[in-house]
Length: 241
Image 1: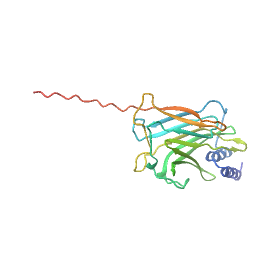
Image 2: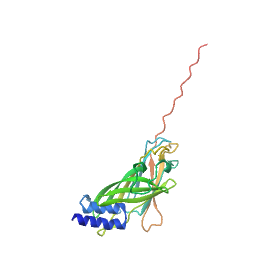
Image 3: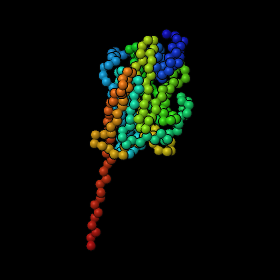
Image 4: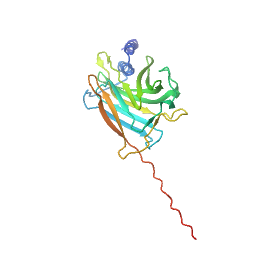
């Protein structure tokens, strides 16, 4: 396929919208993909993994999540464990994504996309935007960066999955991984762990919404937490009379 044809296809898909759709089309058309040996839409159900670093109670922390499903959700909503603190004001706001200042970045991420038997790996940056939103920004080699958006509601983040096709083949986002890893700029941290560590860990739930489904499919996850080191009291020596 010629460079002109690649650019024309990418431009057409860009007009239809969708960060990952655009990138998948370019990667597939230009050969920047790996042939998948096997692929089944319903091989297994959705899975969710969440972790904090550091994972001690009441600490400024990085948060990592991985959302996996061989089927194509329309959206996913995940919630921070109960007691976690989300401080959207800790980071300046990017008001014109994708032209975001470095100080507005709150994390990074990656996605695995399958289209026409090809598996494509993508990476992107995550920025803090107005009204409790985030912008997932990926560079496109054929044009300007493309933005996929998410929104916080309290301590729950919803991300819409792109819904599109390339040359008649469905674009399927099988895995989405995000890490929020900023310490904020002068006003505290973006995310802080719960105040106490329970015996089993910090529970969190992700809801996968699929086309035609009346309710979201909930998937639970536990983030390991480390009990703070206990402080041993020193025995006072009795004074000799």
